[in-house]
Image 1 (cartoon, rainbow, N blue to C red):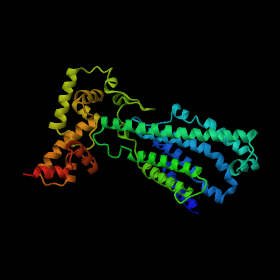
Image 2 (image 1 turned 180 degrees about the horizontal axis):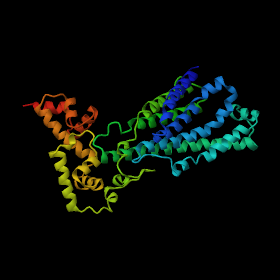
Image 3 (image 1 turned 60 degrees about the vertical axis):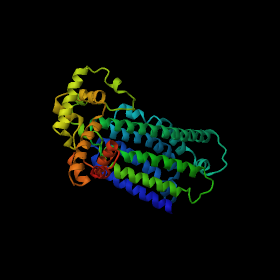
Image 4 (image 1 turned 90 degrees about the horizontal axis):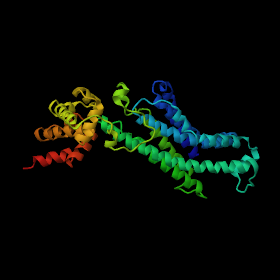
Length: 388
């Protein structure tokens, strides 16, 4: 009974989320892979209800499992790609190619559905079954599909992890504040997904159920995963969404398919920026950020600063990384911390007021940047400076 309750709860969350997603799909195309993931999860999680309430659909449900499990992986990767893309995401041919595993899943589903009822029962619910003909082919393909899913699961989780890591590095080249953009919840989702699948495999291999390993535990983790995906997915905007109004030639960003490790030298090796010009740009940056206090703008971006000092965003980025040896994020936040230190020493204002006054838009971002710069919390720094 507990399994059915957990399954129904997860399906209810998914249903409500899909209801809110559908009207937005045309304008917010990055939500389309999320819809695919939610549909796949709904079909997978519906198992306890199907087996207990609709037993006549047992083998239809079983036949859909290879399709849905192998849809879930590329769907999740495409959703991560849509959130981290530096240009508006859209379906492309290379997206369709990610679903190549359906070339095995769909024929396997058809084989299961076309088996005689007694052979379906024997294959999935009998202990000793003589395998031959279509029954043998179905069993072999089901085993291959299971192994393929395990391998692709690990590969997909690794690819998404690498994608998020590269995306966070890109954020620091463009934004001075990454609050709401870091996709920490997506990293947590990957961990829960890995835990859920590992737990499910242990339950499957266990001969007898135990209080610590049961189908209810699998569904409880699945419910947690669904809740996190639905609650965060509905509100999450792509990290570079606010830059979509900037012409592509200016952003010079292409939607990545796979993270590629590149050094700064390789990235700028075709640039015509000379050392003397880079030094002039560095001086302009220093003037704009410190003297004109552009760091006070909480929404300051690389492109805003480039427009203000009259240089291209590419040259500005190259100057910051190669000449000043800092990312845009680190450079602007260092200026903010310098100003915050002065206010901590000269005023009695609260830490939050000071954080907002110097351009931070979140207390957590201020604390993180301050500790990284000073090795102390703002309160500890103030107390240390006030000592005789």
